[in-house]
Amino acid sequence: MALATAFAGQLARPHGAAGRFVGLAMDLANRKPTRLALDLLDPRAGEKILDVGCGTGAALAALRQRANAKVIGIDPSDLMARMAAARLAGAGTVHRASLETMDFPEASFDAALLLNMLYFCDADGIALARLRRILKPGGRVVAYVTHRDAMRSWSFTRAGFHRLYDESALFDIFVAAGFAREGISVQAKPITKSVTGLFAIATR
Image (cartoon, rainbow, N blue to C red; front, top):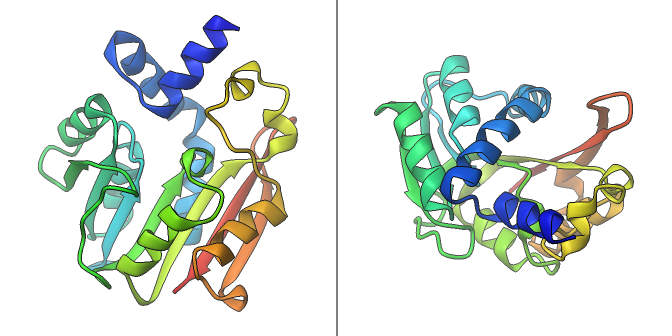
């Protein structure tokens, strides 16, 4: 259990040599969810897009390949923020910050991406409401989490770091954050033969 707890802690906030390994491993594991999330986000040239919990910057780099958008990433891990900045090599901006500590003006982003980070947010949507505030009217967010039916069998999720989701729980956290029900949809998509991913799309 100690190993599972340590791994869960690294997923929440990677650090040190182990954190670098975890970040790169997650890039490989998340290639399909990232691709599907970007398909749903449909980034457009000239947009200002925020990647919350950007990790090593893999999704930010993929965003730039899809559209000539202004990309900004935030991550609470100093290691991940540095790795993402190095990966972008000036093609975007990365800040060490979280949803709770970010300081962007209201209505300043066209879109936002949240990959595998809602596990670490409060259940009442307070942090997610901060994201809604910085989206422009009509701005959109795409979030990805792995369905809890798969994650329940993973020992590290029992360490107390992760909040697990099914379709209704994912929908509800966006409602709690202030997004209108009619502007929220949740889609379940196969990631592997045994893993289902959940994608939430919400519009301010």
